Image 1 (cartoon, one colour):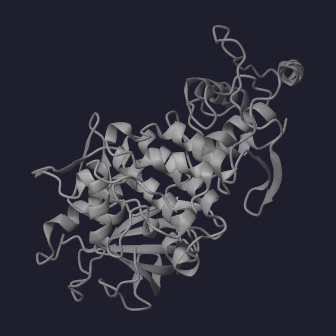
Image 2 (cartoon, helix red, strand yellow):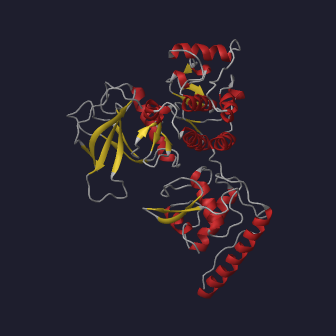
Image 3 (tube, rainbow, N blue to C red):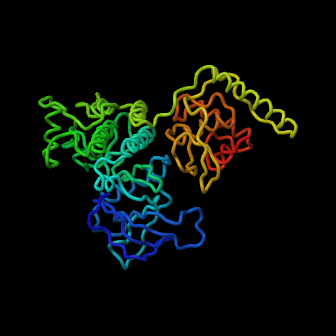
Length: 445
């Protein structure tokens, strides 16, 4: 989103469902976002504040181009299917039914988390923000969550990174996002030139749109990292056109990539790999890229504890298991133990002892990262900070010595541990970490 004149004017005080529109927040080429407050006493789980994103889809206004409807449907489809902590959250979707206002009638409205500002606004105020490296780690985490779920963002740039009240980052604006079909996805023919790889600046377009790969997002992340850490684009030129020409000369081999001297040394290889001339050469594995970025940003989690400490942890886990078995046996409650056929005890490199904090909504808790929310439902195949939290709670509070294969990835071992925990806690043992499972996980035995 940008600070352009507001394309979809909505009067202050306009009511839509449970929401009352307040001041405009931002506007882009295809949507306008307004601050809104809930005017109903019974929120039904909805927050007090939200952001309403008005997308003029043309469903009841034939004068609107048909492609706007497709853009709205793309974003709604993605946000309904993905609930990851580094992606902006959608609470609801509404349709404006107001024939008296033809400019609004038929618009799709997304009810989203209320962010404080965009990264674009931060960079306008401070071209090289102090927290830039940490934000890049969170942005990369969101990109990993998106790619892991089989989607390409297609328009990663500072305007589409939102910062929440606690300073954490969320990816947003998924109008041009596309779901992968094998190695490619089909996206609308829209692009932000400075963040688009040269092969997509003048792409071949068929009836399904432009064929894009996840490597397009990797290129955009490389440009974004260079901008955030140096305040400048990685290709020379005073205009977008001049920078695009420089990028083309680079990928054709007639000009070298000259990164800014101000780019920290530990980031140089990361940015260079993201900006490889061909899509095959780019850092396509976002899990590996995320680990490199976290190390460079200083946000990587500590390595696996030494073997001696692991043995002590296992003895403690065994003691907890025995005591729990005695307690449950006395009350006549049965539970399923860890599968005998499971591989040798293995714990992902989470935290030895997670930080203790007090959350105003959830009380005391333990965290392996800086997530701040526990109302996301996560399941097998998801990744990121919420999965780290689950693995950390299973290992630290509940004695599971086999809590996952990879730190931050919800693989088969994490799923198995969650199912076992749910069976012990008397919950629906489906392996999905819903709010009830979160509450149980965060209680020490």
